[in-house]
Each structure stands twice: as C-alpha cells, then as structure tokens.
Image (cartoon, rainbow, N blue to C red):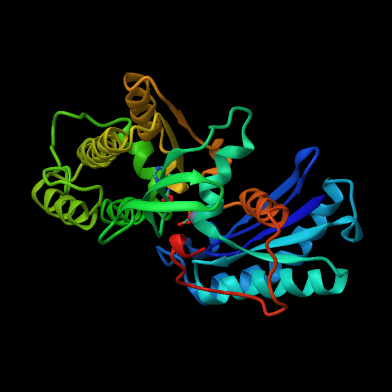
Length: 334
Ligand code: KG4
Ligand code: ZN
C-alpha cells in the first residue's frame, strides 16, 4: 500500500509517499523561511496562504517522482494537529478531499507522534519499549513508549519549548530566523569556559523542564558583556552547553527510573550536533543506545506523516468524513 503524507502544521509544506513494501519512495519539502525571515518569526496567516499555493504542485511532483499515480494510492495521512489552525486546515482539507475523491481512507496524524516515529525510517530501529525525547519548536516531551501508540508522558516543559528557547535566544543575539541552527553553528566557535548558564530544574526531583529562564539569563548576559563577535559566540556556547547538559541530566534520571536502555531523540532540536553527541555519550555510558532521525527528518517533513499514517491505517484505525484540525492536542489522548 502507498500512503501519501501531508505536513502543513507550521512553516513547511512537506509531502511524501511511503510504500509498505519499498519504504519511503519520494519526499519533498517547501520551506517558508524566506517568507517569514523579515518578520523574525512565523506569521500564521502568511503561512496558511503559502501552504495553499504550494500544496498541490508539491503533491503532483511527489507522485511523479515516486513513479506512481494518484489512483494507485491506498490512503492519505495529514497532520491534524497540534500546530497553527489555518496551516492545519490547508493540509487537512486537501488530504480529506483528495481521499474522498479517490475513495480511499484518510487519517489525521498527531504531529508529535510523527516526530517520535521519524527514527523508524532509518536502517537501525529500536525495539519497544523505549524512551523518547521530543524537542521541537512547540514542544519538549520525555515519553515512555511501551508500544505503537502507547505513550506515557514522564516530563514536559512548564514554559518555553527547547526550540523556542533557541529561537528567542538567537533573536536577542541578533541572529536571523530560524535561530536554532544558526545559534548552534555560532556556539561551535565559542569558549565554553567564559560564561556559565544555569541548568534549570535539575536541582529538584522530577523530569519536567523549564527553558524560559535561560533566555532571560542570556538577555542579562548580553547586556553586561562587550559587543563583539567572539562574545556572542561565547554566550551562544554557554546557552547550548546549558540546554544539552539539562537534557543529559534529565535523560540519565529517566533511564535510572525506568530501567530503559534505548532512547529516541526527535524533533527540530534533535538536529543539534552538540545534543546528539551528548546523548550518544550518555547512552554509551549506560550500555544502551541513542536513535535519531537523519538530519532532514529531524525538522518538519511529510515522510514522518506518511509513515505514522501508514502505521495507524494498518492497525485498523478509521475516521469519519469530517476532517480534523486540532491546534491543541495532547499526545497521551490519541
Ligand atoms: O520540529 P520542528 O521543525 O517544528 C516544530 O514542530 O516545532 O522544530 C523547529 C525547531 C525550531 O525552533 C528550530 O530553531 C529548531 O527546531 N532547530 C534547532 C536546530 N535545527 C532546528 N535547534 C537547535 N539546533 C539545531 N541544529
Ligand atoms: Zn515539528
């Protein structure tokens, strides 16, 4: 069976086709970075309108690249939430209508479940159960995964998501949107000994996170420090070191509490080199293993939606003809 995946939850139009026998056969992404750059962040209305412009040409291109045709598709998966309402509506309405026209099932996929499953598109996949650290622009979740669709949230951010903290800190360092990748590249040139940032909520029990204080700490550090390129790199380095250390401390704690030896890390921030290196080291020390998506599937993409939809379809899940768009949608409720 071939499943078409449609991702439009934020600022990327992602389309892919997952084939139950051949695996991922085609995927395309249109990023709206250039559109939102001048505003320093995503403008929801512009995002929705651009999804409308891109979605059909991208579906046609992906179907052609997969050497297939619309009438050969077995199902359509679309991101139903969480995300920006207008952006979700574009993908949901397109996916549902196309499925109706083709008389095939459509399934609304949870965006964070799709991120969690993205490492399953790689050669080496973990067995269940495992821990999942999901780090995106909108969410930071530590999840106990006992099987497909069986999720128990062990910890989450009480304020900003990790990606949001990267983006906000990048902005106050004068870096362009989206700040995460630019900030981490700058951090590589920084001196780790010059500034020291706190490791939030690591001095108390539990697995929750808090990242909004780091952004304030960065602001105060920027105000008190000289304005030169090396200083900005040193501040970026101190920020990244603090985020990475915090994740290492919390994941070490989660491994100890659950006895699990496999850790999946996914979502936009899982592209971060320092974070990947730190968590690989942690899992080596614990005689376990860390699993990541390939770099292009860390951030939003259609491949993870097609795959997550495929798993839900083969598990027998169906939905009514109403399309779904849920800007807020807890992972545990699916
Ligand atoms: O998963 P994603 O593409 O979208 C959401 O579901 O939110 O994540 C986007 C987030 C942004 O905040 C972006 O700055 C961050 O992931 N990000 C990174 C890196 N690449 C993307 N943060 C740190 N280092 C990176 N290399
Ligand atoms: Zn995402």
